[in-house]
Image (cartoon, rainbow, N blue to C red; front, side, top):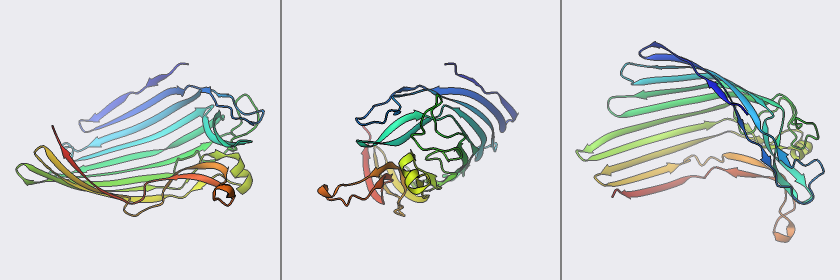
Amino acid sequence: MWTWSVAPRFDLSGAASVYARIARGYRPGGPNFVPPGAPADYPTEFSADTVTRYEVGLRAQTLDRSAVLDLALFHLDWDDILITSTVTTAAGPVGVNSNGRRARSQGLKATLTLRSADGLTMIANTAITDAKLLDDTVPPGGGANLTGGLAGDRLPYTPRVSASLSADYDFRLADAVLAYVGTSIRIMGDQTGGFNSAYRTAFGRPIEIDGYVTLDVRAGVEFGRFSVAMYGRNLTDSYGIVSAGEFPFAVLPAIGGNGVQLATATTIRPRTLGAMFGVRF
């Protein structure tokens, strides 16, 4: 399979440039594990998917590089998109790789970096993305829609809006003692979980994941070969879900469950405080 890339860049001045990029790539296919009790049309393998990416961007900065702006618009066309989903078999829910048909992702990315002469650095970035299926997730060669994705569905784990803001300040306490403090805020918008035909049948919609916000702080001192650092991660103790699927999953009464059909989920780490001590040899 051929891949290629064309990426011209034009300098508008010593402090600004624009670029365009068109590229085509692919991910190879492979075999699937076939569990006992799999339906007759269970995909035993999946094909390579291909993507063509179109992007234009701008990079501008002040002459002293105290302010830098990166801005990009992008559009991706997917063919035979790789779909990772959950299929219900006689052995229970099983993860499987398969192919859909067409999908599209387009949006904007922007990053602004500000630096001051006294050691303060602030970075803000955001992404706005519209990513969705253009066809039902029926295999390119035909067959049943085992994964349950429908044309117009958002692609899993792709929030429409995400953003982050960080600020770090480096300063000197003494000739040989450096210190720093910093904080970061991360915002993740609402998302959808992995495709799951059983969940759509039961609830009439894809798995939905609420957005969340996290706050981190950090501080430290470096003196000679030694360093001490303290940190606090997810100080807001946000219950951020990063993946969801495997419906229907139930814990049987025989082992302490109630037999209710649930979906499994993975979350970010809860509020965490810590300290580190380092020695350079």
